[in-house]
Length: 286
Image (cartoon, rainbow, N blue to C red):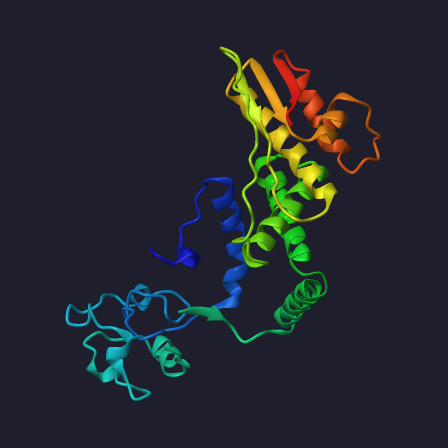
């Protein structure tokens, strides 16, 4: 069985159960398209009412391997070549069948046509948004969609600040990849001091290297610190030396920050991590 429309209904994963529920609504909108005609005349559901073998007493051994294309030549049925007798009602259905040599949508009904019109409106909206706002618009749609899926399928609520940070990160990656060439950029050396024995160094120097606004660089530095601390905690390190070359990022983490600051959410998450039962040393590097 390689057709999901004919798959047996059985309980499975959340995704499979969802597919089965959706299939009940979709089946009525499909019809069978014969394709090249290689499907078996008797045992495939090419009429859309079930295999013909279900309504005949038996299929003669001479007919068992007959395909649809074997019985239709130049647009004309040649059913007289069969050894198996076909009931009159089935025969009438076959002769009236408009053969289109795959599973496709039926001719649009008014209801389905309305849905297709809605889809076209959404497509036009996306194209218009991309035209006016470029990659930023598409990045927002993508990250919001991922966040929604995480909530629905994994019960993971993604903070708004994290969605915003991912949007900025995705835009920056796309711009660096398809924007101006980076071949002429000069390397920047960063100093690194090794940690003491049994201590882990988390170094976020150079976590962002680009030519965009200062606010984005700060956000990238804070996200790097947050994700690095999360990784250290998951790996069960208990003594971490967090090293950053951003004095501003360090000041936000250690000092007061307004709840209206654009990175207040990230700073709050970093502080929550640091407050856990482990030792995190914050160091500014030149």
